[in-house]
Length: 496
Image (cartoon, rainbow, N blue to C red; front, side):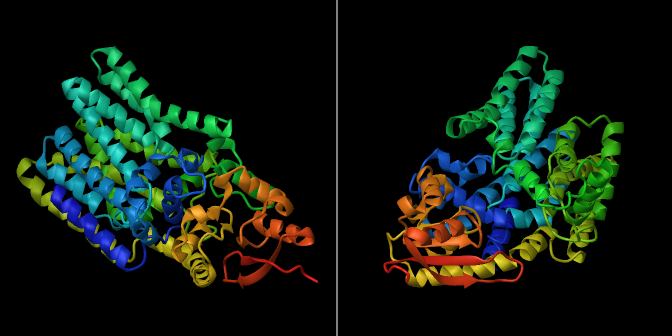
């Protein structure tokens, strides 16, 4: 099984890399560069992990982003995703085999997960979903082991998996108390449940401490200036329509179900739902509460936390966060394995083969994976202006001259131009970046400035022009569907 999973992972990673799709997602670019700036920055260190995105994916990338070529190509960020994809498939196999005592059911669970084209694409990029899948399925397997053996190593493995999930995606925080409850039910010695809760809580507590230490606000990730909720409130204040599903349970369910249809397909949803019913009747339902929590979290987030999902066919007829539907993939794969296990032993191999063939055939018939389509649609403009700005900087930039910019999508320009991030000057380099943006007349020293028209750096350049330093506009890049990108160079001459 491990050999097959590794072969699938390597093949998909190679194909995506050779086709230029590794960094199509804007989030993939961001995760890669956050990891890189921990090592390569004017102010390197753990503060560069930032505050909104959880740290484990970036920490896993550190050994790989240290190599310039791997960072610039994006493959450095894809390696941990691919490894976690293999681990998730292996954990699903082991958990299904333990739960259902069926080799055919185990193969069904692993293959339905591993042959889904959408997860194959995400595991080929610096994305967090495969890493969370590994933590979640590892938790399921370890809790099953603890239920059966009551062993301390199994308990600690479950707690470590829960902590890893909490340091990867915020649905891990939602998952942790329910996992503790399940462990409490399974534990003959209730002190084991307390130990699980303490160890599992270390992940969220570490992130709260990080935010308190570096930002003087333990909840900076939730209510800070760059949090999703704060951004959403600013957008609403500027007149943007509310996200579909915002405080509307029916709409939240409708949009999430549409995302599941796109990423999993109707056959998988139908067999998965049937499998859930069968496992409940057969009383082999033990892992299902853990697996259902991630999809439930997204429905709740759409309703209550300003998390949007856009899908084609529903207003506003766009692609955005459609990949969140994949949170239901481990649940569907495991439940379908339960359906296979409920059949007579002799019929199980044929049923497993037939169901896997049905799912793969439906996925192929559906066309390009929804996750790839989402990344492609949303990256065309960004990749166009990134390439143009990088070409200009690559030609004119002199090492050591410095470039000030706002960290985010603009960081891709430096990566593509081959400019080390330590030569960049961004928000993570506080307080010097704040000083340069607010008082450019005193503190702006970089030769180059890279900005979106109207952002803080663009405004600082205009303000600096009144008294100095003076910057000349070297390029204004206009791409349809994207903000205007401006590239400035410091001028030694005073304007007349």
